[in-house]
Length: 226
Image 1 (cartoon, helix red, strand yellow):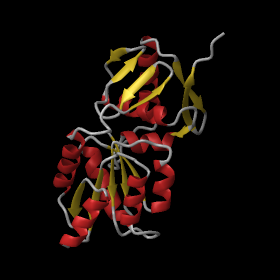
Image 2 (tube, helix red, strand yellow):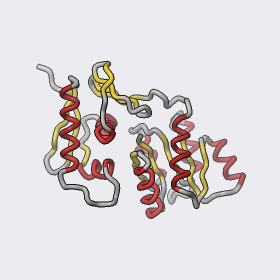
Image 3 (cartoon, one colour):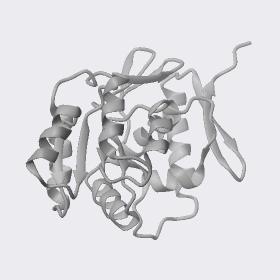
Image 4 (cartoon, helix red, strand yellow):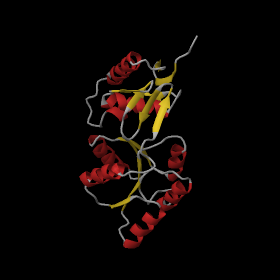
């Protein structure tokens, strides 16, 4: 499940990213409100984790703007601001949950999971290309209307491709997506999982295919018809 972390403290962002990845989440990290606005205009996330003390803008302003744009994605505020007024104001501004620093990583992961279990506008949100579709919350993949079983890492790869149709995704991004920072990743690990995904798509009759851009990465596009 893919979440966006907006946090300008690099060491904390690394800690949170690693903890959430171990809990089964895929995490994109940003450090400014400006970058968040750009990304949220093009990519759908299961949830947003938002620090309020951003370097270019107060996080509450970004939160209000997200809700004005009718983005229904759940937002979990993660901040050092611990007063009752701060918590109440953030919830009124559109936050779905509020966690103060310092915090236990296990609690953050549990709160995020609980948040995503709530029914709401995000349930059933899908990303698609050709006859391939993925429910970003349930992780259910359908091809030509038929449900298909996908392993976890292949599903994460597929989601990345479907979120960026016809755009080249760098190999280094896939490495961060699929593996934690503990090291020991084989140099051909990404190629192995891309190969597996290709085989699954081909066997299921998908009308999309993965192309390799040598030395850079990969992109997905619909197959050309004669």
